[in-house]
Image 1 (cartoon, helix red, strand yellow):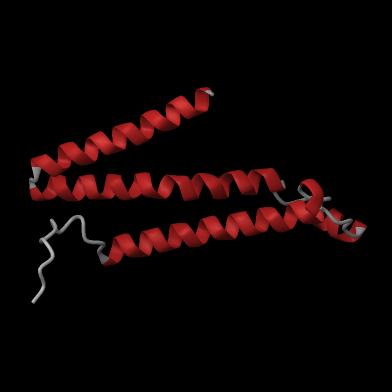
Image 2: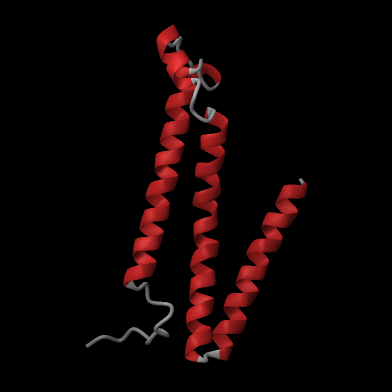
Length: 121
C-alpha cells in the first residue's frame, strides 16, 4: 500500500521533461568538458596547466575559447532548474491549478530576481 501523498501530475517528471533535463545536463557537461580540455591545451587553468604542442594550439585556435565554453556550460547548467519551473508552470496553467500556478510563478520570479541581483555584484 502506497502511503505517499498524491502529487499534481505536472510535478511528476514526464517523458518530454525528463528528456529535456537529461539533454540539457549532457549538453552542459559536454560544454564544461570541452572548455576544460581547451583550457588545459591552451596553457591551463591555474596550476593545472601543461604545455600543449604548437600544432594542437594552432588547431584549437579556430574553436571558441575555453572561457566561452565554460561560461556556456555553467549557464546551461544553472538555467535547467528555472526551465523546469517554467515547464511546470505551463503544465499547471493548462490544468487550471491556480494555487500551483501562483507558487510556480513566485519561484520563477525569485529565481530570475536572484539572477538579476547576482549580475549586479
